[in-house]
Length: 260
Image (cartoon, rainbow, N blue to C red; front, side, top):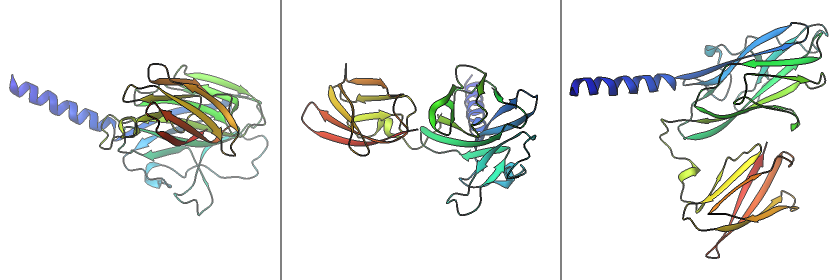
C-alpha cells in the first residue's frame, strides 16, 4: 500500500512538472473572405523575454507595407531591451516565472486583406490562466473580448491593426510568493489591472482609499466593507494611477496602479 502511494505521489509530481514545462494556446484569426492564420502563444521553460528561434519564433514574413489583398496576422516580438527591429512570428512564448501570479502581454499585428471583419477562435483556456482578454491598441475602448467566457468572437472594424492579448497566469509550483501574501497590510490585485481592482486588509480591519491620476486628478474614493474593496474601473483610460490608503490605526499607504 505504501509503495502504491509513493508511486502516485511521484506520478503527480512528474505530471505537474510536465504541465509547467510549457503551455501553448492556438488561436485562429480570420477575415470574412476566408483568409486565416493560426497563431500560438503561451509559456515555455526554455523561453526568454527576447526572440527564441529554438521555439519556432521568427518564421513569419515581414512585409511593409503589405499587399492590400493579402491577409496577415502575426505576433510582434522585440528582444528583451528592444534594441533591434521587431520580428513577426506565428508563435510567442514567454518564460515561466517562479511567482504565483503574473501578467504577460502579447502583441499582434493584423492586416485585414480583402476582408473587413475579423474572427478570433481559440481553445478552452487551462486553469493556469486566471484571465485573458483580447484588446485593441487603444486599451479597451473598442475591443474587449474575454477569452475565459467563450471560444470565439469577432471585430467589425477594418481600421484596427494592432491587438493585445493580456493574460494573468497562475503558477501552482511557485517558489516565490507574490504580493497576495506579502507583508503589506493591504493587498492590491491585479496590478496591472484591466477592469476590476481588488483591495483587502489581511488584518481584517477596514480602511478607506482615494485614487488619483498620474497628474493628480481625483478619480474615486470609498471605504472597505468587511475589510475588502472590489470596484470596477473600466471607464478609466489606460495609464498610471495612485491609490492612497488610510488604515484604521492612522497609517497611510501609497501604491502605484497601472490600468491597461
